[in-house]
Image (cartoon, rainbow, N blue to C red; front, side, top):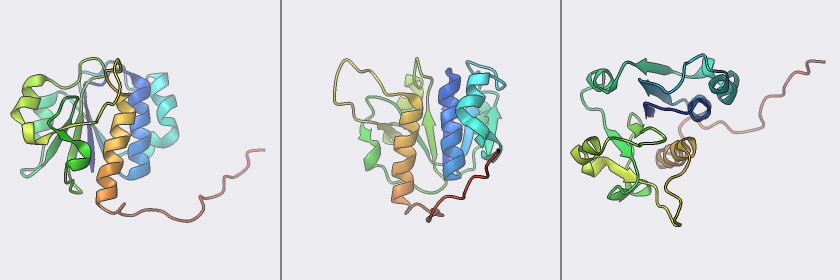
Length: 165
């Protein structure tokens, strides 16, 4: 799977998504401009030491990202008010799950160009406008992985940590 963050603004959200990508062997695509620097302390803290396990690419903008896609790439745009729930989509292993900026979401024109691939996460209560970006990524990614049977799932106890004392 592929996670795409278009112009993310909040370093801890991106760090949390990086950690999620490391745990699920999911590629991460960050599309500039970013609202932070890649050496930001809170970005590193949220991603912990998982950044080295993340397959990630920094793209200079949407056009560069879009032009770099494989010919048959399927993009899913996750944004409020989408015509279809994310649980009703049929995901494939190489799909791209696209999320927008924390404060502005994805551009309306982009969503309207792809109405059949515009997904929403149901909201049950107002005045909540949205969920946290990293929570949204986790919800949709794990639904996609569930549909695919959690390929490569690790079972059994976690490895023991060595004592540093």
